[in-house]
Image (cartoon, rainbow, N blue to C red; front, side, top):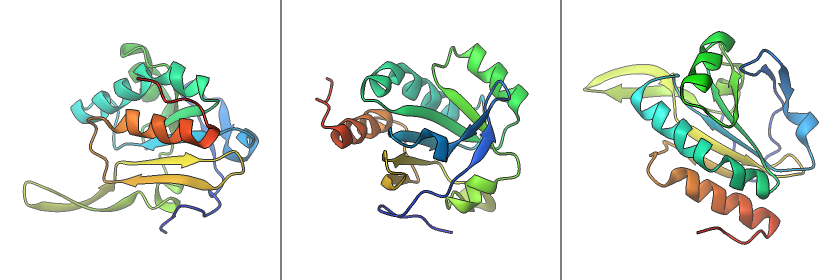
Length: 161
């Protein structure tokens, strides 16, 4: 499935790093940012998580909830979050229900080898539950700041330097 800007975001109910269930529809009324990444504690995924974490306070100031999401289990997320002092919740999707439904599962290539895997993507869901931003095939450098700017623009919040 592919989702596009303006679509209603398919609901989810996933455990966070502490095993608490997070339901997207229960967060309506404020923007939600979900960055989907392949695996905890790999170089690029860690850089992305740390980048978003460094801006977590600014996302909160913009009224948004911020989440990372990967197929890793709750225990691995908890360790990853503690190890890197991450400031956002990490959602566990080991069965790839959201990952596939939101179009983040597909063919990838590394060193000439093709395989199926998680496509690094980020989603901005507005207060009404519609996709207001969709980023696919994300490159980490500058990405979290771009998503923050889009989030601030939703609310009319002044972008931060």
